[in-house]
Image (tube, rainbow, N blue to C red; front, top):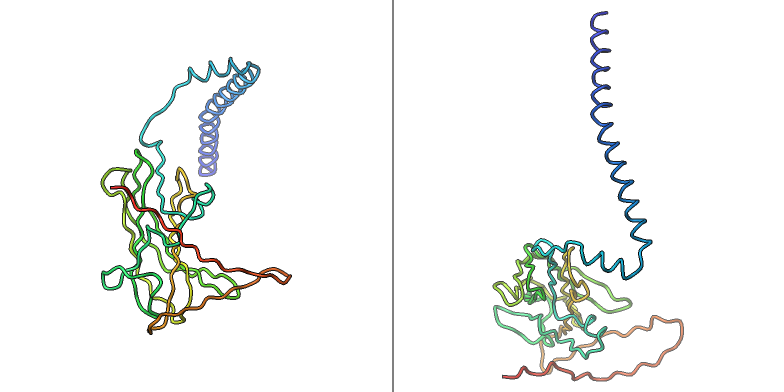
Length: 243
């Protein structure tokens, strides 16, 4: 019986503590919420000029923690969206064999190369630590298939500072089947000022080991009607930089 009384007393004290401890906090929260809603309603009743004057009096924060980085690569999709001409021989993506840069149009099948991707930062204020870079390649046939290669991480400095640009490296064994492929380099960062310039592509050709080199690629018609296609050579190249 004494034990039961002790347990009941303990539970009663616990309930009192919760009631008297949390009740003032909840009441204070509700008061603050009501006051905030009241001020917001009053703000909405102001004219546009009055709202602007009030906004100008608000405090503005300028702290490095609030700056967003803008990691980027030569992105054909982003440049095309701006109405600019592009090259699919990506200047920020290179392939190396035994440490030597090789032509992307003359890759050997079933051979391990190194993909080097140059990563830039358009932000003068925010560096990036542990930036994830994903590598993949597209194969073309009955449908376009994305094939993952791997991922790595780089530390990227601010624009014009150390560690900018950063170099992301990834080994890649070419497919055993000769053909046309497209390497993709994708930058992943959650707090990105401009995520539209994060995907870069580089067209490559895997050819049989003979001279002259020949390769084929597949064309598909993904519509329900007969289509006529015309091929045109695109000779656009990035102009050389002035000295």
